[in-house]
Image (cartoon, rainbow, N blue to C red; front, side, top):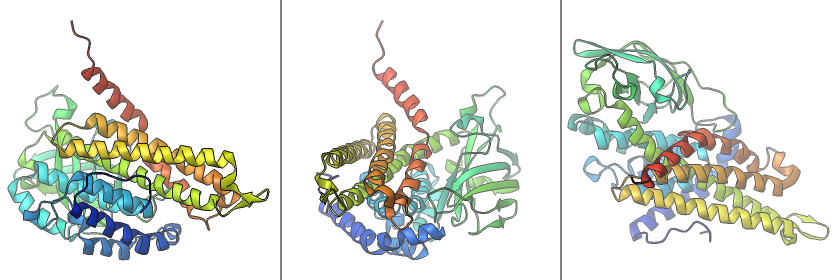
Length: 401
């Protein structure tokens, strides 16, 4: 166990779960991650192992067959998994967000139908907000749902759907003006639909097409796709929570815990970059001594370790606040912003320590160097986080009178 990024006050059960996950990462993920990543190959064997560990049901309540663990436990597991290979944490994250949204907002029938199978990993979740013409501006969504008897007809194109091919349940956010008068605020006329589909690419159910994988700079292995709805018919009982117009709030609640998850990913990748940097610095020799004895390298290691420690502390604080039932959008935004920025910086310093070898695909740091940028934009860009943080600070520190 590393000296950095320790979490105090964990129960024996939490420590046992984390120890099991870390062993799995060290034995089953790190040895194969770079090879699979270079081939952009879906890590089926790793995913099967995570199923056996019960990680797909980590936060699903015990009454539905899950482990009923906290957001903190989940985030610490994600940190460990991302330390091995960030793409694997992405495979779990969207599943976790959909399960969380169902647990918090689903009807009893929806919970009973989906959560037990999600806990086993038999139903795999993905969620879809973004569209080709918009990024963080969720209010500009143009995908539309129109009521037709006991069904809704959905049309539109969605973008950046993690697990788009492998998932069997997608939470899709669309505009739904039904029951909402002209001039209703955009965020009050959106609805989340629970869309069931077959895994794979092409037409995965009538009216629903997943064209194929988007080729990316990093974050490989996991499938990122578009989603096209062409008169897709969804029964009314698959409106999340059974009520239209609540979709924006459902998604923002999911993204809030998702931001803690992205912070945890940043912490994990930064930890791995530090491990690689500090190990290489003690092996590589220049001017008659290992480079770790050069003050310039020691300064880098000091800065890297401090950033790893600070990011971990903020991530843990954000998770604990959510677990306590308090509002945590400020803390989640801060944690996501700091962890993703520090991750990029720690990875770059580890890359510099490796010198020319950092540019070689033979070395693991090359993969981390391509993975880190995704965290700067996933679950809201750094600029969006700063907007959220700034607005919340002005709420907290509003001048009186």
